Image 1 (tube, helix red, strand yellow):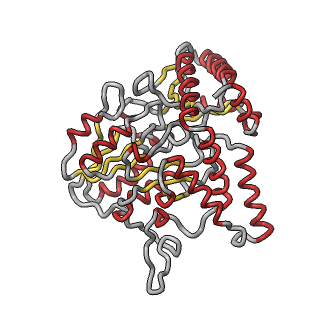
Image 2: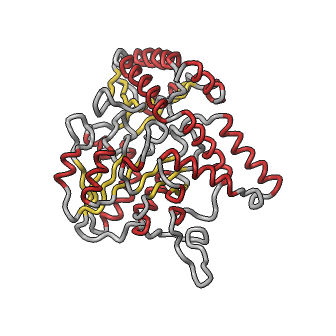
Image 3: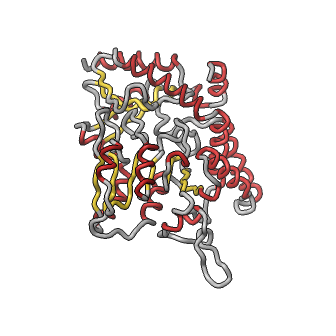
Length: 395
């Protein structure tokens, strides 16, 4: 991805002209075309009536683009209002849980997923944490040693919210398939950053929000469910879309849309469709290369900031675009607010986001820079100058 292409992409993104945005892991900046798709659908709804303007081709476009993104079939794609909602629906559809059944998770598991698992634990299931290897990633060899007939689920947060780790999702999938154990991947930070092939990952369920590195609108998410695994999932909620009337009664759908409802924001799906098509056009490999280059350069430069501590996990030569750090004397939320006053957006995460990992590392909070292919070296210069100045205030 050359600089001329980056400049064209930035020119097509209104937010790039008004803010220096390093919070793509929270929510990225949508393109003008994505905004136009949403607005046009809302305009049609206002002129024709919301029901009358609900063109099914919008959903078909979004589903086709999502399937292409994941190397899946369209019938294996469902949309939801958030990644957490998608994961929770799939997890709850696995039940009921029995005494002694084991759920294995990485130490970096997303807090929302752990909140869902807590209900299974209260029913008698056991939550167990897979040990980390010497780099801090989930240990595949340790996982292999933990497998027995009581293991009913392996869950992985592929790219944790609190740092640059890229967990070995494909290798973990191979273990899950070897033993016939259901495997859920939270790809919330991976989608839009890395190539994501569900066939290679060998996962049964994968989910991610549209608002992060995919640059789609808030209130959208996608979920993949593997063919053959769908029949094992009994949704907790059904309506006339997920269980249509067949003339004699209501029959649950035989595709992933058994997890959707008849009420949906077509405008948001129009925006998501455009964002997914833009991502597919650019290509995941090219995007990965740019993010890897920029974030690697940024990590090196951050080491020169007085009082700044990086909180990296995983091999140094294989990091995501999420850069976690703390700055001496600064609360992470306060630091985020002070940078926002300078027109620089970053993130700040507390223990609740990744409680097992944060507690294991003795961290109360971290500040988070999330790099996108939209970011530039000039923006990094501004960020580093600001951090250097703020480090002196409380030195």
